Every structure is written in structure tokens, then in C-alpha cells.
Length: 448
Image (tube, rainbow, N blue to C red; front, side, top):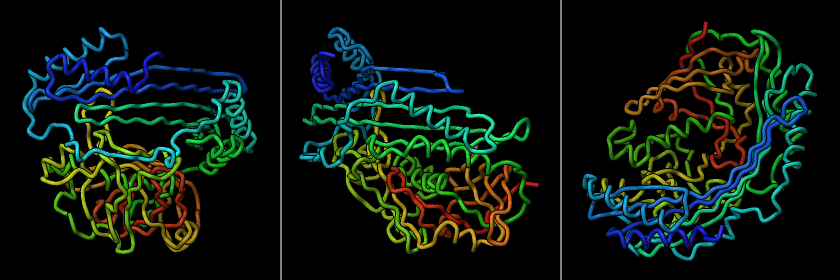
């Protein structure tokens, strides 16, 4: 492309001013991706995409509107701006809408320290196909695996630039590299499926394709012979693969947009004990090579390290500018946005304090209960925190895994569940959400 995301974002601002906008911000995203999928030793699917997306938000007084396009021609930029201004003039007034003040904007960030982009050469399609084939071969090599449903490898880059009439201008580039495999064991109604995968910013950090295929196959084999568990009240251990969903429900409940609407089961819990006293939930957007890292948020404010839960106590909400204004507070630098949407609060890299025991030790100490390794569906009441999800995993008896289980439902209340969680020490440090396996006492299981 002849125009860069930076030049396009500033061209959009110029068009907005000429169209009569009082203020505006623009986002331009340029990306490319390549994905290869194999099946039974041959190429099943190959896809390459490249494109540029442009987004413009304009303000006319306290009215705002957003438009987006994927056409870089000058006449398109002009039409976008004119359409956005016309839409804003018809929109209802929003007393909380508006850009950041110049003094709030991020300055002097260090992109190099974040290591968001791998400078090594883009892998050739043949190299991606080789990885996918290696994962499939390793999955098939596991005794008992009858099919490898899919094996894939991918690579992508993403460049984004934001600019606004308040003086902000900044951007960054990301890269990603991934391998995945899904294996099937058994046959007929007794078939079971499981997967493994890895995604990293840097190619050199990626796990081997053989390891991923082998892990997928072994997990599928472990699920053979699954049956429903007994109905009753039992301890439930959320495996590290699914445990971050529990913390995800907590993060959703402290989202400033939900708090401002009054639709959160934690809306009156600021300063209260939410987790056990030894546990904290921290946010760190500056971790190198991690997908959730970023130097500034979607409104140009500096991101920051903070403790959302400090020694069990809820310390604050996750806020963008609009939700902060509604609550008469300050933004926490957590605005996320797409090219065609207004900002909304979102967390970056999250970590829960790890425990001192291994997952094996927690299993040994739980007596009889359920180890959950996968979940489907979700019924969460955002106002009360009532929780119900379909689950599958392994039944534990006398502190040992006895047999695989499926087709059961686990239920409880998030406030009660989180207050009693016991973490293991098995969290993967390269993930954006670093959450270990979590033991929850006394959940309701519906099975046989």
C-alpha cells in the first residue's frame, strides 16, 4: 500500500474537520494472515487475507457517530467524514461522550520493551503446511486415535494507528504464530474428541508441532468411556485450561460499563472481600511478547499496572472515559475499540496469585469430586452471580482420577465460589490470562 496507517488516520481527521466535526478520532488497521489446514496427510484448506480497515468517530457537540470502510481512496475518506457528521447531528446527546483532555494522553511509551512484533522472516506456506502435517502425524501416532479432525498452522501480522483532534497520534504492530490439532478417539457413539494448540508472538517461543499433536491425541484417549457422574454437592477442580473463565466472570462484573448500568452482581462491592485474603488479581499491560500488552488504550490514555483485587479486596472498576465520567471517577486506561465501534472498557493482561500446591496435590486432597477440563454453554445471571454451565472432565474418588465424565451440569453462585477458591501452581506464564487450576468447594452437580 502506498499510504501508511498513520497517514490515513490523519487524512481522516482532516476530512472530519472539513465536514464540520467539532472533534474526531480515527483508527486504521492493516493486517495480513495466512492459515494452512491439513487432513489425512494432504492440504485441506489454505487461506491468505490482506486488508486495511478505516474507522472514524466524530463529535458534533455532545453527539457522536462512527463509520468504517475498507477503501483508501480520497473520495471515500471525504464521504466517510460527511456521512459521520450527518449521522452525529441526528444522534441523541450523550453528556459522557468526548475525547480525552490533552493532559490525559499517553506520552513517551517504549514499544521496543513490549516486543509485540517478531522481526524474523514470515514463514512460507510450505513451512506452515509442514508444521500442520507434523501435528497431524503425531496425533495419529497416539495408540487409540482413530481420526485427526483438523491440524492447522497460521501466521499473521497486524498494524494499527490511532489519531485524534486532541493531539494524540500513536500506533504499533503485532505478529502471531500458531499451531493446533484436534484428535478423535473411539468410534460410533463412543467417540471422544479433544485438542491442543499454542499461539505466540514470536516463532521461537512456539511449542513443537509434534508435542501439540501428541498432547491432543493423549487427551482424546483419556476421555474414552465417559459417563455421567452422580448428582449431588461435591468439590470441583477447574483445570488450568478452563479456570480463566471463572476469573473472566469476575472481570465482567467489575467492568465499568456494567457498573454504570447497575447490572453487576458486584455493583456495591467496592472495598469488600471478594477472594481469599492471600489472593490478588493484577493487570500488567507491559509484559513482553504477550498478546494483551499495549502502550496505550483505545482512547490514547496510558495503560497501567494495577491490582483489581488486592489481597482479596476489590479495589476498583475497569474504566474507559465514558464509564468513568458516568461514575464520577478517572479512566483506568482500559478503553478497547474496533475500527467501527465506540470505545468500551476491557482488561489487558491478567494474573491471579498462584498457590503452593500442584494440581495433583489438590486432586489428592479433594476426596470425591469433579475435575473439569471442558465446558459448554453458559447461564450466568449478571445481577445475582448465579452460575450454571455444562461440563466434562474426570471423576475423582479417594483423591485419584477414577474415570472420565461428560453430560453434566455444575452450578453455584459466583460470589460464594470465588470466596472459597484454592489455586494450584500450574498457570502458564505466556498467556494473557495467567490463572492456575482452581478448586471450588461444594458446587452442585447434576448428572445421573
